[in-house]
Image (cartoon, rainbow, N blue to C red):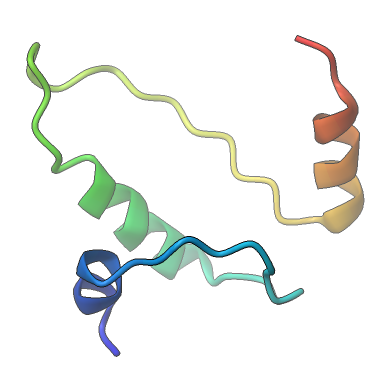
Length: 64
């Protein structure tokens, strides 16, 4: 299945594989998401990608 087919046929997922996603795949997914229209044109988005499981758990414990 190609990336765009996966995006167009997306489903809600509650269980995830414990597998790291290659950086080029993440970049392609983010690029596709940025193509979505907005009422005020392109916004200045910033992304933080955390791949290490322990780091993810630390971030999830943060209280905003």
